[in-house]
Length: 169
Image (tube, rainbow, N blue to C red):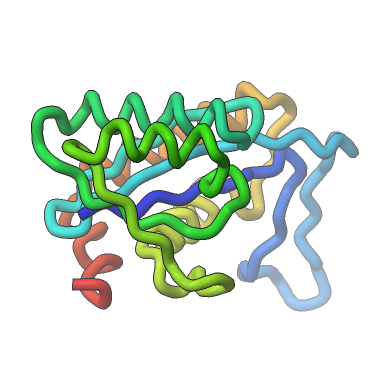
């Protein structure tokens, strides 16, 4: 069983709680740009396997590309995919693809406006907390590198990820 979701990570700094000497507010420089990295991801509920892929945009075509990658990664096992209600998840070409691949993938939609039901939201939260909050990234490449490092750490530490997934099991 796989949970699928997508997330955008901004290059400009996101401030989060931190310790500082009283009266000295921490300052983080900013580029003033609003560049973002967009990421599709899946997390396997019972073994905590996390897959991700960077994309330039979120749309039906990039979603299909991610689904193909996911299917190849699990083939020939059948996938039970749980997804939210993003508009491109409901696109005609996406549903045609699901119909064509129903032997290998069955899809379930979460109720609208219920991110708390998607296990991958906890992974995105972890990535922001440990990879991007309170940090300055001069370039998108630096942001990508930090996220890749954080995601690889997540992939190596399945016990920690299992803790995030326990409420969904």
